[in-house]
Image 1 (tube, rainbow, N blue to C red):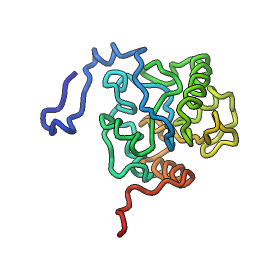
Image 2: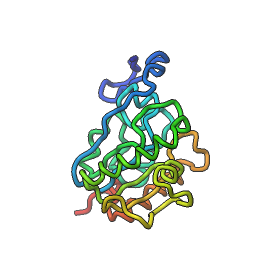
Image 3: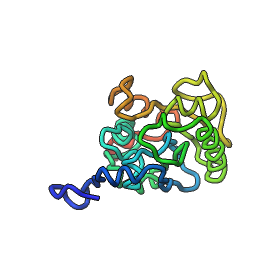
Image 4: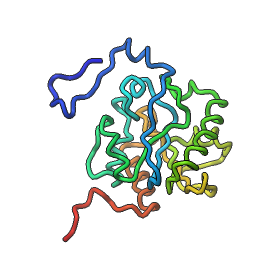
Length: 202
């Protein structure tokens, strides 16, 4: 795995080679989890870049981390390699399906249905207050809710409130960085978390 020598070591981005990306297919990566989180974000499944680096939403052009900050959920823009800082903010990340693939549409319906069942058990064990699924199509298939839309859902998941966010992939042209940030901010306001971008008042 190569790195950009022009960046300081603390923020140096990992850049997998083509061979490393190809070898990452079907891998899994660890969740970012802790008991009693405020919000557990649920991606569809890891992309090859994420599987090669071990970082969620790691592919350049994915807008998850900018949207997280624009929505006020992090005090600064985090690099994917800093995902370990999320639990201290009450946030975590898992995936609907664990298997990495080049595109989410390579997943089968059975994988998403099984993933939803595994997610339900995971939520029951870790008990986050909110579960935010990042991708409405995966939510519709996995939870058999074909008419589900973005925003709060009427049902709960193992006592956690459910929310559906847009897919932040750069391939999702229906949402801009601005509208994604607004969608994440709407979730933050519903959870009653503070806007962490705001300076503390004395």
